[in-house]
Amino acid sequence: NAGVTQTPKFQVLKTGQSMTLQCAQDMNHNSMYWYRQDPGMGLRLIYYSASEGTTDKGEVPNGYNVSRLNKREFSLRLESAAPSQTSVYFCASRPSQAGNYEQYFGPGTRLTVT
Amino acid sequence: QKEVEQDPGPLSVPEGAIVSLNCTYSNSAFQYFMWYRQYSRKGPELLMYTYSSGNKEDGRFTAQVDKSSKYISLFIRDSQPSDSATYLCAMSLQGAQKLVFGQGTRLTINP
Image (tube, rainbow over all chains, first blue to last red; front, side):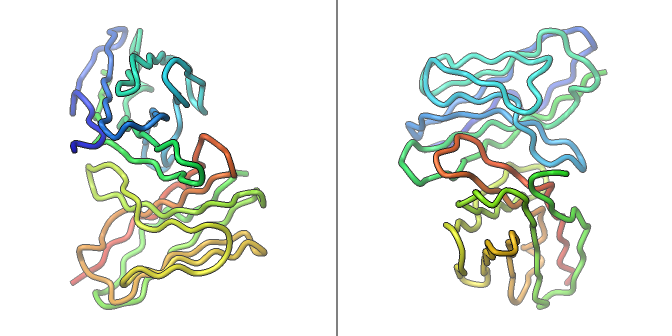
């Protein structure tokens, strides 16, 4: 049981380049999330998907797109990277059982945009 | 004003000390309260999970929720250097999809 996996672990982009961050979970969870974490800002929600086929904006969606490819996979795309998107990105998933609000996090992707 | 406020620290204490970490919140409808621990360059992992008010104990860790004061705490007894990490509080409304996180408190336990 790998839990939540993310690829790549590290990435350096030039301004204007595009890339896709991949996330997969093997826990049969319905909900999946993308966060960014910056010093002094805590975790900020970018997008989430409550179930396969649905996606919703979080607190900071501008400059990002997401795809819920299937129940296991949820990807985050930066179409035209900007230095302000330099951050650590975490994917998380959550079970569907009522009353269980725990989110399980992946190891993160460290992205630098120059 | 943020929905959840948490002092970012840093907090540095000697080994063996009792550590108190706190969050305040503004939305009285929050029902589920969590503490996550995040080691350097790792993802957050759940440490404690509490529903509504009261205390919950797990080994050296105790989580307290005071809904009347809109205040939650995490106590660490007999702190160890391995407890050095960032601790994030998080909370949720009944039926909500999203968690609301505090900023996180960076804690260092000195041997």
